[in-house]
Image (cartoon, rainbow, N blue to C red; front, side):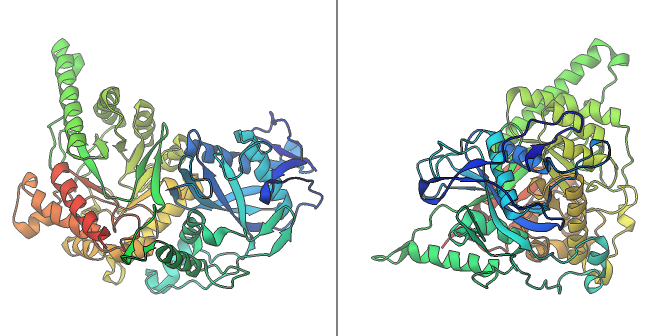
Length: 569
């Protein structure tokens, strides 16, 4: 029974031998031949993935695509159809971690994937090794625990199914609130010990880069040998780390480098989420509530001729200089929007949005590699913006406005910000009532629902950012409730990066009496400080990881101070 990678039905890739050389523990080389048959039953398995050479994220992404194209020669069907043997259920977040065992090598990018498979454990091992070979890993001559393009290990196999978390169940739990929902522990699957494969993985409890992403997926799962939950194993790892790094003469704790959650971007770049990042707002619209008209490139060159072209070029240049100033002031991302989504704003044609945004993205990209997000509800604009040099799609509708948005972003393979809102900008302020007046739980449920939809469309969790949507279908009380309970929101949605955009919003004006949005920056800073508070200093970032604001310098300074206070011993 040989394995094949069928990328297209009409053009199957050449098979790789089912017998392979695997680097066994202790450095010895053993040859393993799969003889057991594929299972008709679908099993759940957890696979560790890592890379520390080349474009690490692309290596991992390519490995996942190869896994999902894996078939056996015996697989059949009408008209050449092949049944997939591996399907990816979920991904953890991605983390950059220092190398273990052989420390003189580049840092790794690590994560965990949860899969459905009809392969037996040994067949799955063969599939992983074949994928590693196709990515370019040398299984025969590589240094044990040394640098590698891709590394995949089976952590658990035969795991019991998790509780269903579809839309219906989310709505039924606790009347729509997940605050009282507790998931029962479930089995970590089979125990297997053979010369070439041990399940569960024998060293996972000593590896933060495995335990942390495992806990992101399911910290309640019980290890079948240790008979404790993954969450408890991670707590024990943390305790050992502290004990192992105490200076006995001074009792000072010298913390080793910890895993850092990252958001991968195109062209081998990443955003590191161990500090609070600031996203600078650059609106190229005539009617945004705070800065509309400053960089309006919506000029009719056909009517104005050369004067119109010169004017547009001048506006694009000024917008570019504004972006560069925000970078100098501390922005980690520039968010470019060509359609106002203020309360009451009307939808514009996508051609107008493209005309406003694409020249600015292209201009910024010519002089800076700063990450750029495109603030749009339209899939055609998102695609054009990414092709012009943007890196992230920021959709205030969470992918609900344009039915093609989620599939488009999945094809683009870039991060997406999924924001909570209701209705449209024209109608949202009439939709501010929440079930049981519990804005936080309702918003969390909606965000998790949108996350699941995005994942089903092909956007993995490690490319998702969630935004509770301050000012969007929220009244004064709803906005304040969200800001006060960002820690609770963090607990409910889990490890996803959180973005918050309170900048100069109307609730600040209501509380301070400032009618002019530009005069609300002090209130904005206070809102952002509240959002950063409320998390354990050992966690990656505070309750909010990314702050979307107009006044970058002031918020960046405030975030730096809050990060330092949180991380102090």
